[in-house]
Image (cartoon, rainbow, N blue to C red; front, side):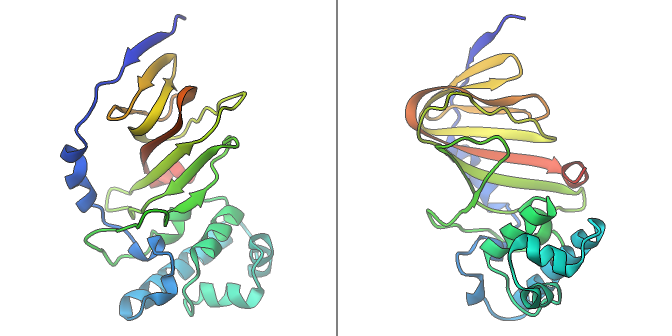
Length: 236
């Protein structure tokens, strides 16, 4: 099958700015220091995270001691998290999510208190290692959208590519994905089609087809990636 090269049309970032304000997230998961929060909202978040950690652990047939060991935290800390006694740091939540084999956002989905917006200062995103990533490929989670009545999950990332790699990772996962190019130039593959992306260009596609950077033309390259999926599909 021949490979088609398509020039993606530039999009107006301002036209999409309104969508950011509609994000309803567990905002405590995006703050650099969640221990600074106080009041009833914090307690509800702690309890929601604790219930979800316990539920995920039991679904995996793990004891609290086993999960604590896999996440490299003490059994005392494990008990306090599951009982909603303390606010776990982002690093601890990420360790738990990796030990459980679930997205970080899964641990936050039981939190029902809605916020008007999720604000993340530059550099405060959560560093995430996606399967198949290479050296020089950096992913930062910028926010969280808890599943609503339609069980829809959303994950926004800032992706930075800083140097060439011998092989480029191809990803394939349920849901839809939206890319918006901020800096540099790359050729991005979706299935058998290649798209040349420069600042201002965007790409929206079905993420169930193999996709990923194919050529890095101008580095460093930075782009936003917003992934949406049904929660049940992500847990299979």
